[in-house]
Image (cartoon, rainbow over all chains, first blue to last red; front, side, top):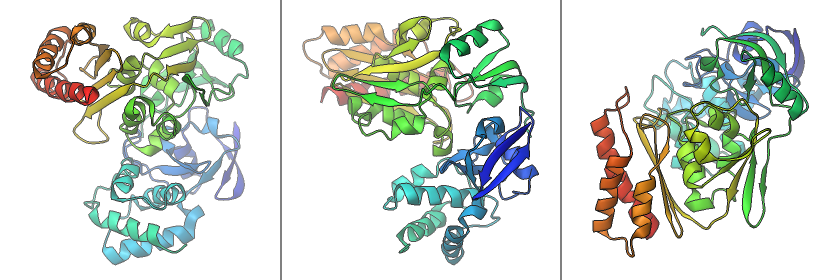
Length: 150
Length: 267
């Protein structure tokens, strides 16, 4: 069967199975920045924005996404670059596997609460695990990103 | 990759009566709400029935109550200005302790209730808020009766009603990490009377009725009555072992946080 999605601003039609999750469909259709981690809603590396909200794509049935708006990290390229600059300056990442999902969640936080304090940043990122870092440099980088002019 | 469930047919009806008819056709037909846990809930489904088209995503508020549609996401409830004020904000706090924001953007209150998950942080809070569940066929059912049922009814949960009772509230989830399920959770409310619930025992949340009755019968609540109440709770609420914690550890946690919670709501 077919579903119609708007991915990063472009209308797309994908062939899917009834039991496929959004993660599988996106990865099969050349969106490898959407990572497969735990595959059971725990780690958050599969996060995409669904109608503007961060969701774990491993647990969203693709069949329910007809006409939905999907954003992967490629859809927020400029914002991701700004965050990456702060991450780079502070040595806030190592392997980078979680970066796309982290960028999408942090971007969503920026839209929702640009004045977020340390505790609010931590709470917002509970669902995005990073297996390399101790989060401290990441949180500092995120604070700097939220403090950027635009 | 976790192997997906087998789905013969996916249907998103536009009416509740059609949804109910489809559900009633066969035990192999299942309803999907938010779907956050469906991956580990079902292996095979004949007809997967979505509630997406039933307009059950809403929070209504008037002077006396809140009415929450069953398909309202946990995140929408957590961030709702009015609900943040209800009973010192314990509903918002409990929901905010459920995994990460990305999950709470898909998980719904209806799915969280109908799953009757033993680890639920939500059910205890709904018990002490005396929530009413509104089903398509059964009509109004108290959350207490629902939790005590041995089987989840084959019915469609439409909405949840919460009274604005000017309650003081306390909620505590004890877990190893923010992402983990609770080792124990405790919810307490008080206006004229106490209501106390203990969840993730590791069994499903339960009201501590004798404990509350004892406290309600006391003219004043002091350290002695709190000690007595905790003793009664120890006899009334059955705790057990699982991978997250031992029975003995839960006993210590329950005593400690019951005391703190009772002190908090009588301030």
